[in-house]
Amino acid sequence: MQVEITDTALADAKADIQALALQEGEELPGVLREVPGAADVKPAFKRTTMLRPLDGSRVLIVGLGKAGDVDRERLRVAAALAAKAAAPYEARSIAWEVPAIDGIAAGAAAAGLVEGTTLATFRFDRYRAADPDDPSPRIERLVLAGADRGEVGSDVDAARIASEAANRARELQSLPANELVPESLAERAWEIAAAHEAVSVEVLDRDQMVERGMGGLAAVSSGSETPPRLIALRYAGGEGERIGFVGKGVTFDSGGISIKPAAGMQEMKMDMSGAAAVLEAFAAIAELRLPLDLVAAIPATENMPSGSAMRPGDVIRHLNGKTTEINNTDAEGRLILADALTYCVRDLGAKRIVDIATLTGAVVIALGSTYAALIANDDEWAGRVAGAGDRSGELAWRLPLHPEYRELTKGKIADLTNAAAKRKAGTIYAAAFLEEFVDGVPWAHLDIAGTSWDVGREYVGSGPTGFGVRLLVELARSLA
Image (cartoon, rainbow, N blue to C red; front, top):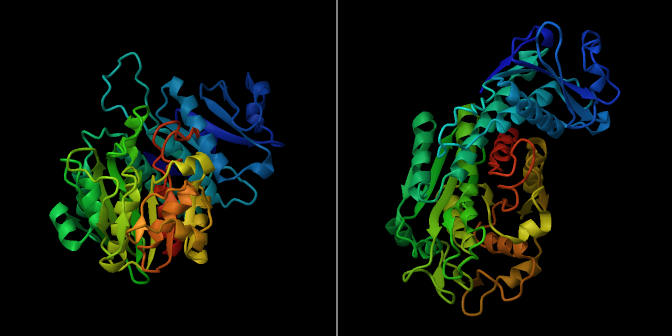
């Protein structure tokens, strides 16, 4: 989407729809007070009213609610509502007056409008036949009126690039598992490297994984005829402490021999949401040319039942030498992340790590779709990640990591078990398992099983959300 910044007034901005936000206590500009329908305008949050001045323009008024409640998230929602309200008018462009909000910098306010508009324009329709009676045009051009590029430009550019990256992640999430396989994620990594000179890629196949001792990846992939991949990316953007991202890339999760219920299993094509987030955040960071040293590791595989699949009771050995007894083949994400985390630290040289994964159903019970779970072994690093989530609107709530949880991960005949007999603290248990593979470096784990799809926010709806892309980009910006 094209984003323009202009210091001209909203009334002079050329667009199919002009949009104006209104907080409680504010009045319409004088020129709009006499327009038919002006009496219908209410500043209540999410209330929209279309006005039609005599010059033939369309002015959409979007309520923000009480002034003290307005934040960047409300601006995202307002922008998304405006984009949706514009659709019946077949509008392809919208001009917003960047609102002046107490406590919110102009750049942050403008970025919120960009994020909400961009994310709301996402549509996955590649498998639908074109309907000539429903053209459903998208917003292709966004104008930010009454703004100073020098004041808001960097925030606007970052918001546009990160939101477009989130939409690309949503596209990956939406693809069916018969089209998006582990090699597809590797191909996307190669595309990113081809587009950015500072990015390089290495991809390991199954034989190389086995040779290196990645028992988790080897075991999980053993039930599928589709070859697994371990995708490693490097971004040579600057000096300083090397940061590592790790994303779970299970392109379809049947549960393996511990097979999942049939109802809803089609959603398990999105068990690669962490990988999509890491890939597209990496692409956005490279596009922004952020000055930092960044690496990523993405373990990509299917988890399928077959005669060659891993079995409950099997014992495997991971890259760091620790052994795990498999008591539930549907707890596969932690097995592949274990190898990827060790690889990210030892082979890629990461000094701080964030892993992101659709890891546990338990997190949906605990936090619903509002927050991802954040679990970390370092308070300062956890604060950095949580702060990036607050600013991006991709919220993360920190859960505790106590030594007693580690006791639950101990196996009977191996160092660890991937599923404890007692169903306690499932989300924390999985994180405690992962901590065994980070070699003590500052590490944060994001469980996004509840936030990757079916969230219901106005700018992402009930489909895939691309959760994590904007958080990771914001984290990188804060570190750079």
